[in-house]
Length: 478
Ligand SMILES: *Cc1c(COP(=O)(O)O)cnc(C)c1O
Image (cartoon, rainbow, N blue to C red; front, side, top):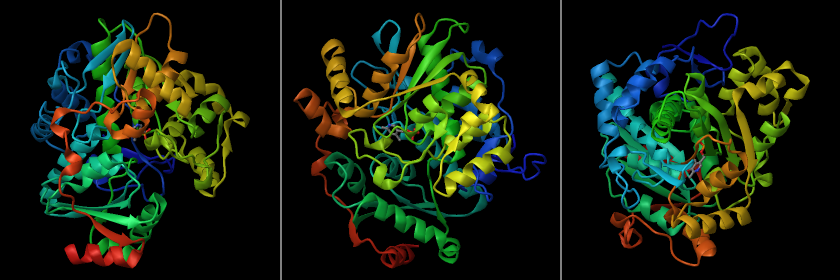
């Protein structure tokens, strides 16, 4: 399988790359995102795949996209990644060996538990694989990498837990001092590992993010200290996420003629992009429901055809904070498919977006193609979130987190009669305790092994929001 850029030269895509070429990189040199040159068609493999365990299913799917890692090695990486031990934080009575257990609220309404990994958010599903792929690829090349990132919560901890103990990877993670929940701080700062460095910056998330950008823009520093990233546009993360759409489909249906609806709490469009690709590969998905919070840039697009990224001052701070985005970094992948994979059109649309503007597909022929992609969308507010968390708790004795609540709320409005709806559960309630207390007037449930992590000793270096200080911290440890 070769990879092309969403902004490549459409008439003559000669600059193709292999999977291992793009694994450690970020954007394509032309500013686009990588996608496989075609989507493998798998409708006739569903029978064979239905009974596979998660690791083997992951291997079968990923091997369609990765042909430059020997099969035996890729299978071993999948087996090592998707274990009951790593994904053990499931609800009582669920089978951790399922990796993504299905929980039913009604005969045709299910949650797919994607947040049973070490950091209790769905980001572990892909990040754990990425950690093992990085270790493998760097080992082959005899290289090391220093990952520099900024986090407001879920991504940073998922990256740290994925890179724990990897001798050829160091992680330098910036977080805004005092801005994450006590649980999120404990998760990150209680790690005591020689390759993990937590830096709490005196400032907001945006300040931390700006420092990462400034360091990455210093080409000399970046090359000298082998600075890399694990951001959400990484293709391997999207590829890993395709697997659980198949697993969820098999768990919620009896026959491979059945169709389903998936509902996906969305921010950067990474998770639902994997659902789009699963559908393009032939998985019988009748509808992809995209749920946003008050930051409704994607809901607006699917309702109106207008893509209008927000400024940071227009971006709301909400109680489903991992969906507080101003623009959706993976959305360009979907638009590439929507416009018939014409990179020249994507370049033109993003010329406007990259300059701080918008685009409107109503004036183009592409708007008429949109319904064929089976997306519908909706948004949720803080009040909706509280009401949904309360309703699910009272009627089903299940505690759901704020992001999953957005997915449930919008799914209830957009299901299809007679078809199973599967809501992707993207985090556990304990990560967002404050809102759970507001909704239910009680503390959130938490998996037993994580009782008391807030009282463990913490390792974190507090620093001014200063690029030079961060650079010398990194340099002194490489
Ligand atoms: C990251 C995240 C999301 C949004 O996922 P995208 O891939 O960015 O659309 C939703 N919920 C939770 C809990 C997350 O951590």
